[in-house]
Amino acid sequence: MGDHPLPDVLTTVFQAIWLMAPAYVANMGAVVVGGGAPIDGGRRWRDGRDILGPGKTWRGLLLAPLLACLVAALGWWADPRTAWAVIVPFGPWPEALAYAYAMGFGALVGDSAKSFFKRRRGVARGEMWLGPDQLDFVFGGLLFAWLAGWALYGPAWFPDTYTLPILLVVVVLTPGLHLAVNVIGYKLKLKKVPY
Ligand code: CTP
Ligand code: MG
Image (cartoon, rainbow, N blue to C red; front, side, top):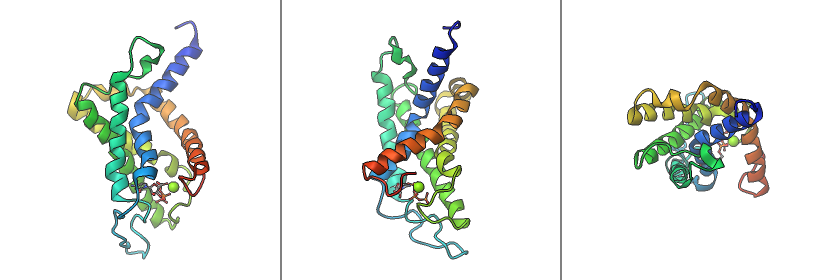
């Protein structure tokens, strides 16, 4: 493959998407399984605005990461000898399930942290805050993935798996992927806004 840079780049791109899939799926899943009681209980911050807002719910925070566990299960089902070799397990059973839940949960913690600062800046719930809205779940997911990977597999596992090229691809690619998925969610009437 060394003589052909394109396939190598594509491999890195697909690998990056797969390695972020627990965070992506949890973040998308919150739109579907979320709703109900808000995390902030409807309380206001001292600036008089919502602490997080009604878009951040307990169901989204706690249930959506379960969908990330399905991603981990897919990792065992995939055959490593095929072209789908980028689909690798996130570690052995049942640790990979804990890993995927942690990464998905981290994605939504990042999303909630973003909403806290969004409200402080006076950006209304559902309005776009360009930049943080597209990357909050990436940084939250990666932070929790790093911690969970360390706890489950030791300190070397995360930096060996999420290499610098992978992380670069993730940061460059995710905002576009996020927008594309939201446009689809809007067309399917799952989302009120296409971003
Ligand atoms: N959602 C949820 N619980 C979460 C995160 C998301 O229930 N912890 C659901 C909500 O229905 C939310 C939708 O997913 O409206 C879209 O999520 P997001 O775009 O992150 O929230 P916004 O409504 O845009 O709110 P904010 O402005 O605070 O980002
Ligand atoms: Mg939004």
